[in-house]
Length: 114
Length: 109
Image (cartoon, rainbow over all chains, first blue to last red; front, side, top):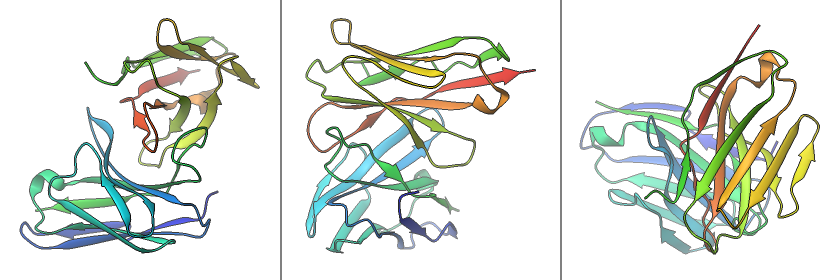
């Protein structure tokens, strides 16, 4: 299995509080991604990174920010959590960004915003 | 129109049956294609990449039809352990992988 660790695995937080999810990889892959998965919507890309300090938005980036200060770590921050951000969040890594290079996923973080 | 579409199912099949799923994509310039398997409350795991010439891995066969813009997954001799959700994924341009919402398969004894 790809060396990807997400933390925390589960979190319950209140509306309006900031939340940071962490993704750590040991594969030295250039690309890292954050997806959320919800019933009926499947996996939707939030943000991704193609190198240290290089990030770009996905299709559902509103309300989220990311940072990548080291190759191995990619942080997802919800500045002020809302109930609509209750979801399962998956981090993924890829050697070359999806072109002939599949993504490998972490175990996921279950976030509940009350 | 969604970029990647799948029939959500469920497909309920008996053990030993052959079952096929399709996945359509809208961007004709899409370059890479994959099938993932996801078990309940688990992360998606790569099942196989889909090559232009098609490819086979044991009981699983994947095909790409660029003219009609779809990929397919065929599972032969279905096992109970094949019960899962199967996600297709497409790279419409560089860097990003877009996923379908998945097709649920339930194999019964």
